[in-house]
Length: 393
Image 1 (cartoon, rainbow, N blue to C red):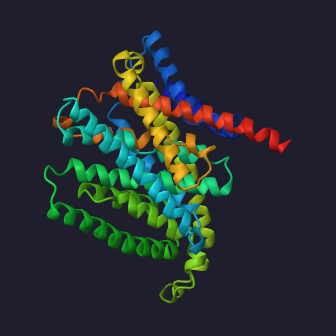
Image 2 (image 1 turned 90 degrees about the vertical axis):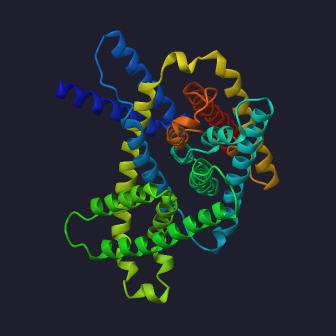
Image 3 (image 1 turned 90 degrees about the horizontal axis):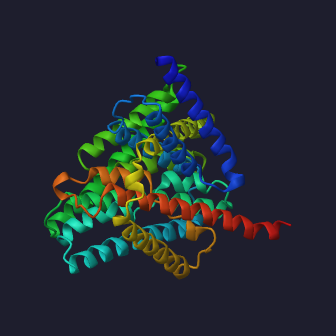
């Protein structure tokens, strides 16, 4: 039995690798193919009456590790200098305003029509308002450098802001100056922790002489994130700052107090670390979406009672995105289509307290929004490729 499991996992991950290789040419996001492959595996095991234990408890843990690695991988690729300030500013605004507009807009509409109270509606809609970096970043690999940078910044910042927004609403029943004070105190605290932890981990990376040096660093990064999550601190801020710091050591080497640690000597180690993170991210992301596809219930996917809500919410997502892109004079194609929901949506949905869950925001609704936004992304990327082809010829 163990041999069968090993063979199956190896074959599935190798197929996932083929999906990743062909994605830049086909413009079909690998996540769609992974979900389909996972779903087909479920149909096959059901048809052959193969008993598989309940895999649902694995999904949140795998998703959390995947989110950490994806944000870290993306931030390691980004350049940090004055010329990037405009794109960072635009990324923050484009990530934040549609999230707030959709969350408050849908919550107000639902409350107006008598669907529970405003606070509960807001908690349940937030997961759908966050762009998934797990899908957006891999899909942007074939784009021009400036568009790719924008997608990495925007989707990573959307994840961070989404978690901050969700924790603020979910953990507080009453909102006053004390609540906001605690919220900003948490951000300040995690920023200080990020600064100390980043310097500490960088020094550790330069001092470890053992032939195994990257795995302890990765484990410490995950540990710091997990501990910060226990205290409801936005640990993704630490992940992004750590990645940005390591990825820009050359530029930061001019800072006086950093010179004593000779950051230029770490360039080779950082490159190897980045390669390891990229490999690990691929593996964890592939396993997550294969597992999520396997756990998809066909009846939930095709549930007609939530389909009109899903289509309406998805339409709102892309309308708001189009308005934002126009306001900030950003290119419509292909950025308009890159607003997928995915890993972060699932993690936030699973974090909703049981007492606050609403029947209208069911697993069917979440699943349908994820699939529809992924399909829009796929069709949009294919359409953009066709538009680019005549120009290249």
